[in-house]
Amino acid sequence: MPDVEILMAGAYPEWDMVDLEATYRVHRLWEAADRQALISKVGSNIRAIATRGELGASADLMKQLPKLEIVSCYGVGTDAIDLSYARAKGIRVTNTPDVLTEDVADIAIGLLLSTARQIPQADVFVRTGQWGNVPMPLVTRVSGKKVGIVGMGRIGKAIAKRTAAFGCDISYFARNRDQDVAYGYEANLVALANWADFLIVIVPGGAATMKIINAEVLEALGPEGMLINVSRGTTVDEEALIAALQNRTIQAAGLDVFLNEPKIDARFLTLPNVVLQPHHGSGTIETRKAMGKLVRDNLAAHFADRALPTPVV
Ligand code: 8YV
Image (cartoon, rainbow, N blue to C red; front, side, top):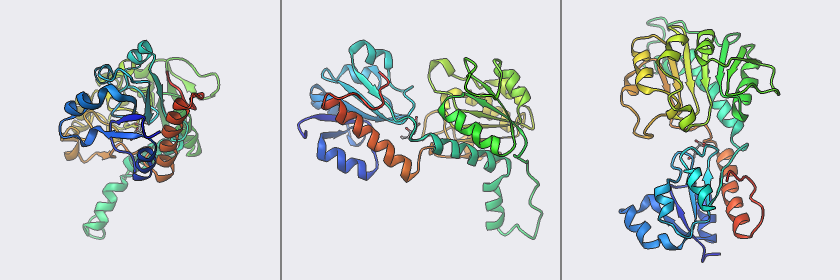
């Protein structure tokens, strides 16, 4: 169907680009010197947007595409897509759940171990010849500690399973208790932070979770506590987090997500007690291949009038 025109909000790996460009007439928004000029030129022909979790699709963009039928998102989080606009206009929206669950849970554990055991700092310690000259500072144990999980969806459950294997005591915060899990439920986020040694955030982004990790939660987590965020930058009050890290009112943080990615707040780069990741929770070859396939399968199903494999709207 090379006559079907689609707008891509950002790049996908080469293997997806090759396939998409063989199937559709692809317009690369991220490469346009003047994005608005490209939208004005081709907007009236666009029937699908292929986007990524962090790029989404705003109502402002969708309004300029009168023939838009579907937004297919490479990512599980659809918080950057204006779902109410899509719903109101009958525009379908799909995402890539399940295929990335295990990898995002893995990176949460990687960040937890890296932050508590100071693995990146220890690597620098060896590389810079400090080993043997000064003692490596002692670090914090992970096994057997109290882990508070903020969000008990698919990825939250996968994180819980992993921390259970470390002999950790697990409790979670969510809007409602999940009858399928036996972990402790805490309806008060400040109380969970107060109890936990480590707080791991994996709630969806969006208005409902905006800055739920605020100064009060961080204060409750306390000077020995550590924060791990693999959700969205929006869930954390970054001013409060940077102040807490600078003043050591929490001990450390491990972060995969930020506000204004990739131009994150420069103060993070100067803090010794934070481990940084470039929003790479789903960034394995295996998962990215599965995500790309799911985006393409959703588009193909839509244009063949078949049921969408993973619909959101
Ligand atoms: C990104 C994500 O979409 O699944 C999500 O919600 O945030 C990620 O998987 C990924 O970085 C692709 O851009």
